[in-house]
Length: 81
Image 1: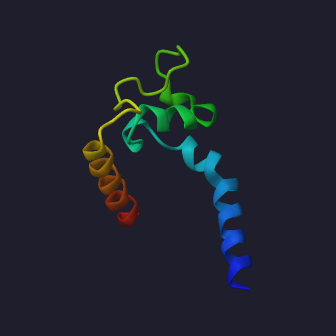
Image 2: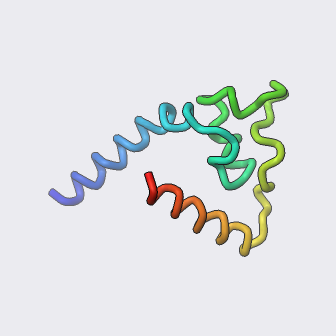
C-alpha cells in the first residue's frame, strides 16, 4: 500500500511539473540548465527569444560548493512555501 501511495504521489508531481514550471522565473532555478529544461513550459524564461533560458544563471558546470549552496537555498525556499 505504501509503495502504491509513493508511486501515485510521484506521478502526480510529474503531471503537475509543466504547470509548476509555467509560473516560475529565472531566480527560481539554481542553474541555467535547470531553467532550460523548464523552457518548453515557460516562455518567460527566454526574454530575448533566442532559445536559451536564463542566460545569466550559473552554468551547469557549477562547482560542488555552488551546487551545495544553491541546493540549500532552494530547499529553504521550498520549505517556506
